[in-house]
Amino acid sequence: MNRNQFEQLANARGMNTERQGDGYQSHETAVAWSFWQSAQFETVLVPNEHGKNRYGLDMAYFRRLFNRELNRPLVDFRPDELARVLARAARTADPNVLQEPEFHLEQAREGVKA
Image 1 (cartoon, rainbow, N blue to C red):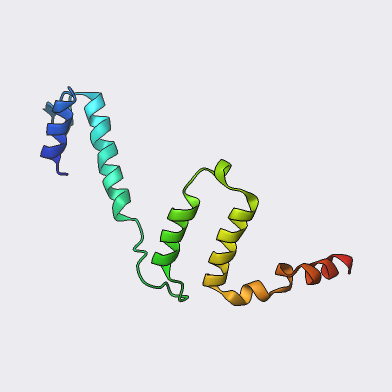
Image 2: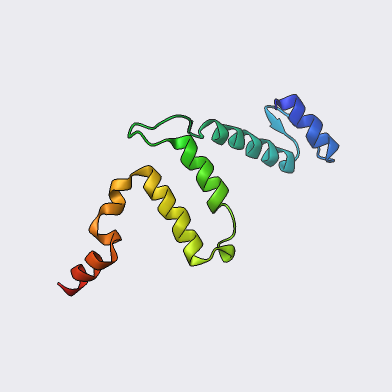
């Protein structure tokens, strides 16, 4: 959206788009324009999450997984459901991590007793 398109949208919403120098006469319109510009700047800064990152992690796979599985209210998750989602993600990311002692019940208990 360019400035002219912004002004058309603002006019359609009843906002005053008369300009005063480089800005707008209406404070509401000036704030909206400033907000729109900063939002546009932020969208440019979103990282490209396609392919693998420098560690070999498939970023697109995990972004889709997290958006699909974790972008819902936690009130709907049972503990076992969340554990399965996260365990599958961990196994996919690096199955060796799940072989570490803290993830094995017997070994974890022995660590607590020691």
